[in-house]
Length: 296
Image (cartoon, rainbow, N blue to C red):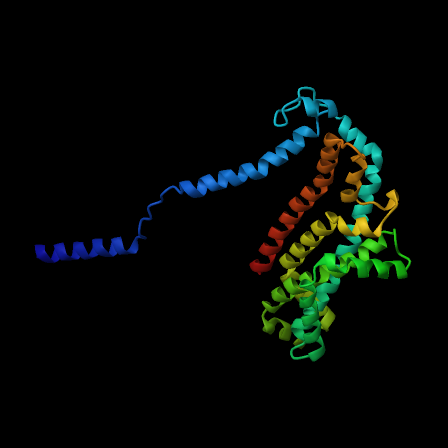
């Protein structure tokens, strides 16, 4: 009897120990932590230097230690930037970014939906191949043809000259990303929408768009940041100060023999603020889209 009880207790103990997950011994990853702290310093130090230098005067910038906070902080650099038509440049950048991102994302989403839903359509398959080929062409190789086309269309030195090429450059990658997300939508959902009498446009906006919202938000943020920071197209396709965007306007504080470094960095800070706001807002929308898409 005692032997039987001992066996039963040993089996119960063995089953209990088997049901418990194996204890994982966590060892500190000193190498990974050191690399992470080193990378954090690489990222933080330039940002810290830009911020503190923007509050220094031009004379103190050359007299003080560049990594120490300013002994006499001043807002004269920010005042100088704002008084140098910063509002005009900011509005131009907003017009170019919104005017290029919204049509590019809308056209890319409809094109991706048509490519995925076409089945074996030859024309749309060729269109998809053309979009993929667009990713292999560097933007710098198209500067001269774009310049000649803009001249022929009499659009040189206008904001429309910046918007049209930006739309063309944003479409290939957007179509690639959105088409991959639309392929993940179950085909049964499309069939059920068709049985309910929904048209293709109704299925596009009422089914595909809500389920691919994270991809749409991601593509929108990426294209907005790329166009906002664009420098080559404004440099080539505009000439007058009235058509400058923010990245090109940094040249305002560069002279022939000298450069006002604190003023340039103050303009960099002001130029970066909208990007940070867009990132914060887009990040929240992306998380909300993921929750809404997978919660249903």
